[in-house]
Image (cartoon, rainbow, N blue to C red):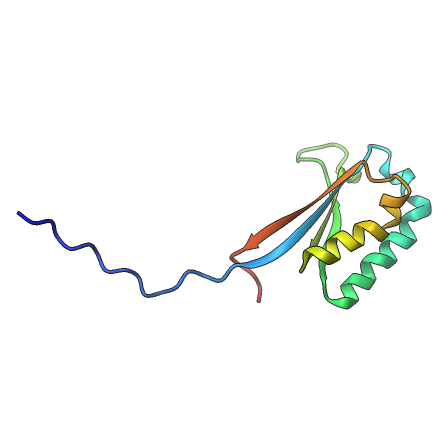
Amino acid sequence: PPLPPPPPRLSTPPPPITPRYILTYAYPPTILSDRVPHRPGHVSLAKSYKSKGTLLYAGGLSPPLPTPDKDTPVEGVFLFTNEDDAREFVDNDPYVKEGVVEEYSVREWACVVTPE
């Protein structure tokens, strides 16, 4: 006998994908003291990108829980709307220029569920 017809395709299109860019910084264990002279410039730079509308979120990430030292960040995490501004931020950040950041990466994040 012939095979039954395939089920009808869903008429709902897939959700749109909104690209975002995650910048991560790896911090040394001495970040709290290392950052002191550079923190005002770092925060000012972040606020300028926030005002521009391209930096959505930024902050320190604690070690995996449970941890006794949750107040010392091990990474910095920044969420940008575009790759160019994420890379430009790195180029101008005092934390990077002064060697406070051990390493960094910029990665594209395909956001399917967003507040928009």
